[in-house]
Figure (cartoon, rainbow, N blue to C red):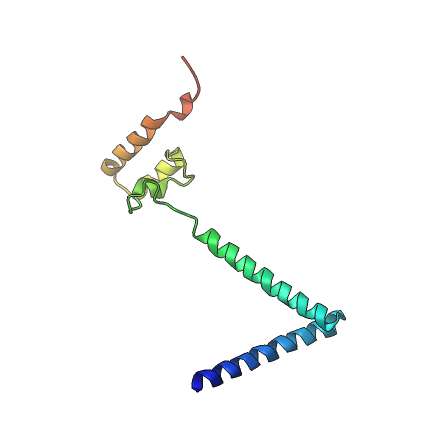
Length: 122
């Protein structure tokens, strides 16, 4: 019985809030009741669509590039996501690691390609 009473009271409150907003739109814009209701439903729909788009965009970032379940220092430092470490990314990585830990990571990244020699045949 309590659930039924709560749902009825909740629906009445929502209806009153909706009716007040529709009447405010009618007074301020001079639209009819049907047009004001449509306008309010359109605004609610657009806000919901905006919320869905924003919530999906936040979930698309993945720092784990090799799918091993851990974000390594190299993956964390690779700011542009190209898989290779630039000079700035190496500087960022060197602030967090000692030289002994940094040497194999930098050597592996430099073996993949030399930026000063890309596309140049000798």
